[in-house]
Image (cartoon, rainbow, N blue to C red; front, top):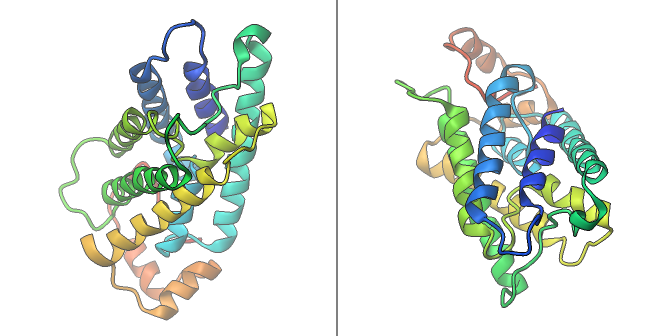
Length: 246
């Protein structure tokens, strides 16, 4: 449901209703505020995962099992398709265009595009990991709002390069609806590499998380190790975007 709402709102804002240039600020704010609102509202239910790249980062960071990550990503893609289908159905034929399909801008090579997607997703993942870290003391403000602003900033920069993918499901849905997969791999490879790098940078450089191999394997298999159970009992108030191991 969350991906369906998020993508129908964001893609709808990115449609070209006039012949003039696309209002980048308008689109960026819509994607950012949609992400923040949905994470804040459903974070306590599903963890607020609406982006396969972020879910993949949680898998790499040993904060989610392989089983859960797989089904989250499938659900996110299906939700994105549902949102794109709703938008397709309620939009006049002459206004649908390519349904806000992510495409490389003129002069942008595949290497440039992939690198930009890596960078945009890396900053998003570092933001998500930072504001949802249960080890952080004196947490102020809203984690959901911080994540929303990270999405917003990514769009302000990325739309001039790749249309600002950052989220493979967001790129996948319109590609399916309009049957256009030209350079589509960029919007999976770039964000997934960026997500993995973001998880590794945060967990091993910025704020190292001490876990031995057995603990990481237990999380990957969906078996919560005894140490994690003890930490869970002592954990404070929940945050918006949960880091579920099972």
